[in-house]
Amino acid sequence: MKTPTEQPPALTVSALTARIKGLLESQYTRIYVEGEVSGWRVYPSGHAYFTLKDAGAQIACVMFKSCLDRCKARALLADGAKILVYANATVYPQRGMYQLTVLAAKAVGAGDLMRRYLELKAKLEAEGLFAAARKRPLPLLPRRIGLVTSPAGAVVHDMCRVLTRRFPSLEIRLYPALVQGDAAPATLIAGLNWFNRATDWRADVLIIGRGGGSFEDLFCFNDETLVRAVAASRIPVISAVGHETDFTLCDFAADWRAGTPSMAAERAVPERAELLRRLDDLDSALLNALTAAYEMNAQRVDHLSSLLAPALTMRADRLSHTLDRLAAALAPLLEKQGLAAEGKLGRLAEALTAALRLSLRDRGAHLRELTAKLDMLSPYAVLERGYSITTDAAGAVIRSSASVRQGSVIHTRLGEGSLVSVVS
Image 1 (tube, rainbow, N blue to C red):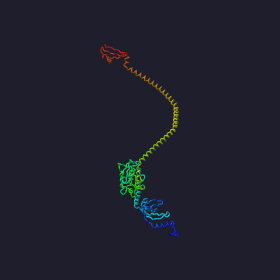
Image 2 (cartoon, helix red, strand yellow):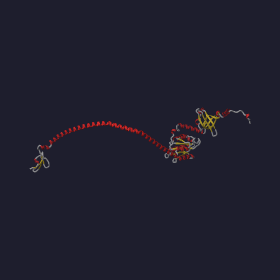
Image 3 (cartoon, rainbow, N blue to C red):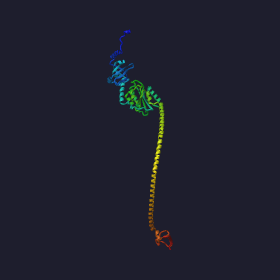
Image 4 (tube, rainbow, N blue to C red):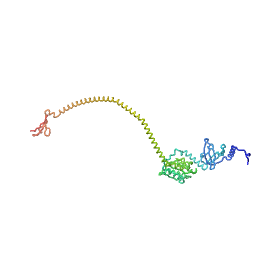
């Protein structure tokens, strides 16, 4: 063993790092490395930085803007993607770390699924299928909940337990569907269609989903036809696929996304006890608000009354005074008009009296004239001049002596009185 006095010259940190940099960069140039993307970030400069990892280790990576712009798999470069990179190993002396300078990248395994996922997501997003404006609000108090999920496993039981606990009178129906594999989308779509076409049992909310799993296990919920069916549903849909960190395209297309199936059940219906408590609170708040409003308005009325009373009294006094002045001003005028009317009435009465007298005089003269004429025509006036009228017992006028017989009784009317004679 060498003594301290025989110790070789010490290396500086820079010298050691330079040796390591030379060895590493000469041995590991243009190599292929496979791993999962984590911490993906693109800076304003256009360079991308991320970590490539597997179950046992991780390495920092950088992809400069020029290479990133040429990369055909750029859409895949997101957290969770499994990719194969073509890179050079480099040492970053200032921080004493090594990294990969990525020249190109492509999807491998689940990374291909990620590519398909991202491409379809971009396509549907561009169509507006995920727009917040088309999402409908969930009903406040649904009476019927439709479940589209597997009848096996704990998920469906957990959802039913949560739903009935929160609102015991709720009606629940299950459409059994596959939730994994290539055949799953068709059964999930059939479930959505069945609830939308049902006439005898109309659901208020639908929950579609399953429990947790790998990206591959959940990939059936990224099927384009299924995603479009979720968006086209006439009944509001809650998507509850996997865990809170899992996102499928059904989540984006649904009206509401829940982190887990149990969370979907909690979101679908309010808790009955909590709802009753809120109603009590609202009732109390409404009563308090009405009471406060009444008291405030009563105070305002009292205040306005106190302000208006003197003004109204003053106005009434002014009006009364005005009426008195008008009455005083009208009295002489009315008296004058009354005297004028009285004089005119007297003159009219005198004129009428004179007219009546003149009319009576003229009519009296006319009457006397007519009377004289009638007297001249009267048979009794002839009798006054010495003539007489003789009638038989029947009252018939006797015009000839031949019309009477001896012993007949006759009546003679004279100017004054009458005679009864017997013919001899």
